[in-house]
Image 1 (cartoon, rainbow, N blue to C red):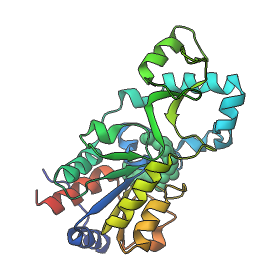
Image 2 (image 1 turned 30 degrees about the horizontal axis):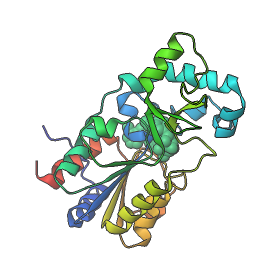
Image 3 (image 1 turned 120 degrees about the vertical axis):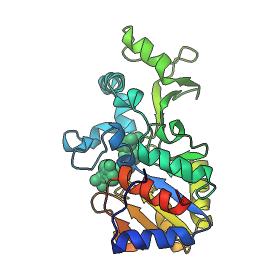
Image 4 (image 1 turned 60 degrees about the horizontal axis):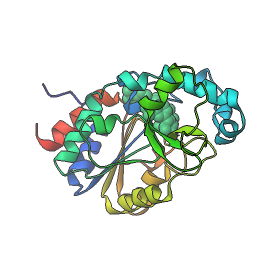
Length: 256
Ligand code: NAD
């Protein structure tokens, strides 16, 4: 059964701009995955309500073994490994398969767009599904390193070069991968409409992607529960849950 998109001016506007677009850029944040059981950072149940983001810098990770041990313990208990894509991820994958949104740019590190069937995803903040050696760059599946942590190696190092291991995510204080940012910006320029889902659009330089899309002539449609920092740039704002609004939008666009 097709999901229901509230029939209001915002929903009508969203559909009008997205229907008119030849190329849609989907840009997602943590809010697209909360319905899969992964908390966001700044929403009402967000991680930063109970934790201090200042502790989660790359500098702290490099200098303090206790911070690293805490991060590995957290990673052992992370909901990411058991999370499944939700209706919003699946709808975005349908839009991609239909050729309407060839590229998804995400701030998420959970791999759920790929699990839903998206095959071109730019992960601006990296992935928690892999671990990287901060010295030699070797990449390993996270599951392999978590087995070592479970067996008592609570601050694992690279078995080849002895360097520090860290999930292949971008921490505060760490630079994004320039090639990923460049490609995301090129996609922002190439699109006619940007559909931003589940993000406060407050983390930079990532939020520069939808902002660049608008500056270079695209329409901006936001699906988010709560305000975002780019609301004043938006052509339509649908303030609904992603798992309801996104499938309804995609059904309407694809004529399901
Ligand atoms: P954010 O936490 O700043 O904002 C999330 C927004 O989504 C909030 O406005 C919240 O109200 C809204 N939201 C929550 N659930 C929603 C739902 N079901 N439908 C619609 N809206 C919903 O997240 P952000 O803007 O992505 O930026 C924070 C950083 O969080 C990113 O760098 C990202 O890497 C990281 N992060 C990622 C994950 C993940 O991979 N799933 C989880 C937590 C944080």
